[in-house]
Amino acid sequence: MLNIVIFGAPGSGKGTQSERIVEKFGINHISTGDVLRAEIKNETALGKTAKKYIDQGQLVPDELIIDILASVLDSLKESKGVIFDGFPRTIPQAEALKAMLNKRGQDVSVMLDLDVPEEELIVRLLKRGEESGRADDNMETIKKRLLVYNTQTSPLKDFYKKEGKYQHIKGIGTMESIFAAIVSAVEKL
Ligand code: AP5
Ligand code: MG
Image (cartoon, rainbow, N blue to C red; front, side, top):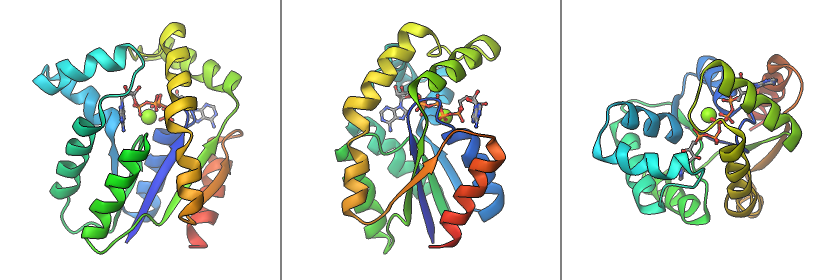
């Protein structure tokens, strides 16, 4: 089982690189952000709750997101592994993920930390905001998302360093060169 946590700030390329990893290694992709945006689009009760947090650049409460992740994970049959994109984002989420995987006799294989300077993140997100119009890709919300990342999510690097799972990836350059660095890290596992 190959269970990858793809980690990094908003705009660091988690979604972009996840698509390539899925294609190369044949594992499933769970993006909690994509799950929440689908719920918002379908105007479900969950979507209505999630929208309030996402529009403010805040994290959806742990209990809610952990339940969502558990049910998506349960729905996967015959999986060769999973790439977790945008989850975990807090220590309780990382502990919950560990417990869920351990229950299945598995664990996180590696945490890939896509490291991108903040100026570049802002350029990428503003550009995407103009092109595809994701509601949270505006300057005000981007700043909040970056603050939340730096205060609540970034400490997970130490969590995975302690677990011996941390792998730094230089997240600037072409999408191809970053993917090559990821493949070489995964193939060394
Ligand atoms: P989520 O959807 O996870 O958003 P995010 O973390 O803010 O990250 P993005 O999806 O914006 O960026 P990415 O790293 O995937 O980069 P991408 O590949 O798109 O979460 C959204 C919200 O949902 C959260 O704020 C929160 O409210 C809620 N949420 C989700 N999960 C949660 C959880 N676990 N707990 C609580 N709340 C949760 O790339 C960005 C752009 O850059 C693209 O346009 C891409 O084309 C471009 N790009 C990519 N690579 C390169 C490159 N090498 N060079 C130039 N441009 C590039
Ligand atoms: Mg994404």
